[in-house]
Length: 172
Image 1 (cartoon, rainbow, N blue to C red):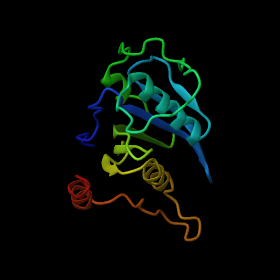
Image 2: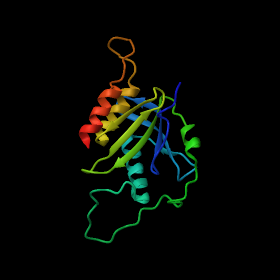
Image 3: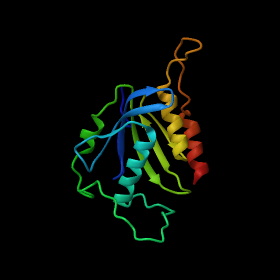
Image 4: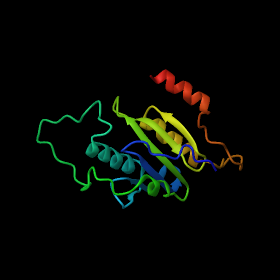
């Protein structure tokens, strides 16, 4: 399999490994360059909150909107080695989930959401997403490979490369 889409290309690149998926429940682990340890998650909400915390710690991508508070700001703990890379990209790309593996590259945090690219490693397909919701739907579509009603495989609805390039042009 050609791995032309297998790269991180950004300091906040994440490899998300899905080990279990049932109905509305996805669990697994994700990896980033700033820790040798996997970050375990038992729900997508938990994974997204952890990734958002990483982006805040790195201050990349810079959020267009920030949390507002009238009280004292609390420092978020968790990443002692904030900006020291502890794992090479090659090591990260060797991690795989039992059900699926995704490379997530968030390029912008605008409109209280994320915009970027996601690569489904098993199929070597990359798609641009405009929101966290769209990213989650792409992952769910990739993981839902068996149709219960018809009992036959269903191709996840990832846009074709031409559609994706057109979407990128229109978003700029």
